[in-house]
Image 1 (cartoon, one colour):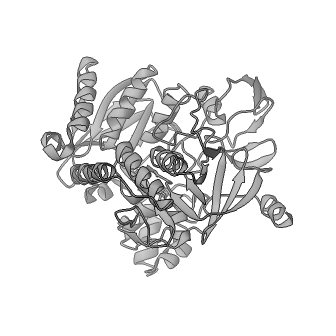
Image 2 (image 1 turned 180 degrees about the vertical axis):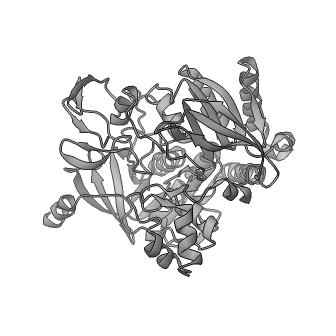
Length: 67
Length: 418
């Protein structure tokens, strides 16, 4: 299973959140971790403002971070 | 009859189970992929099942109108979630709570997390927030988080408790079970030589983009800074108790008291056929939430609540009261802020701008302060900042959010067509 983060292909495990994937890359903006604060929003498959801490990664997801 | 239980944490699970065994048709709704809620954070591959309960995972309730519940099911934040509307005979609200964090300089740096975020990353995703971590805030949850961090290999260099709760640990009101839990955590900290410091807090996080050091302060009784030192860290997690998620209860018309949903002995709210259980009725932990959930589930189907369950609730509330007394938030935290400290993270409203709105521009009501400063008007709808803004300005901000969860216009339009 892979997702693409800012153009880079990254392996993911089943059940991993997008935020967890970004965290392993040192690029997450997690603060509350439970979908309350919206700090961690990313663009996911061309949809803006998706809370990465609440979204389970799916094979082929394309993630764009703000930074 | 149809009972809709909103929230699948300890309270919601118990409510659903209690209603289901009494032959109600039970719908258990939760935004997570499996039941468990924020307390039973569990690895993704171990879902629980509840016989007789229809569990709707990955489902948000975005509005409640009377006893009509509006749902969206599918991957978080859309854009193609399935809409569903359910007319319930009874509703059990078990929406729980989230961490409260008081602001301090640098709390918006990367590497600063809520205690809850640290807990979830560790327990669900098996990831430590950092290698060299400080845990700070108040309340016994800090100890649970510390253990989880250690389990995933983080080096916790200190647990900083802003209060000095030693006396509380000796009071019989605290309950033997919880005393044992605290003692076990204490032994764990001692074994790993992790300092547990009371009357101490992180009052600033410093670094360029990412936290590199924490300013750790010795506090007086009111939480004013007595003296400080800088400690090198790569992550800090902070928790000052919990904020109940009351927006659905408010939308349903339930009366609140001191910010919590008011319930009677049967967990009934002020609205007929609407019940509430768990942290939204008062912060008391998982055991109390589960007991309240059982009461709510039985009451929702018109059953008689066994007296031993009611006794459990009473005991739990005594414990909760003792805990609230031992771990208050003291007003001195306000002195930790500088004028350029962010209060509202979404709209980047500083403490100075907030003061300016109230003092110079004479904003007095919640609406005016929001419009003048933009505090609480961002994406999180003030969930993170409004309680702090209320404490800083003296202006109370209502927690009214008629659209309780974000939804896409396309999803709203799709529901209209059906």
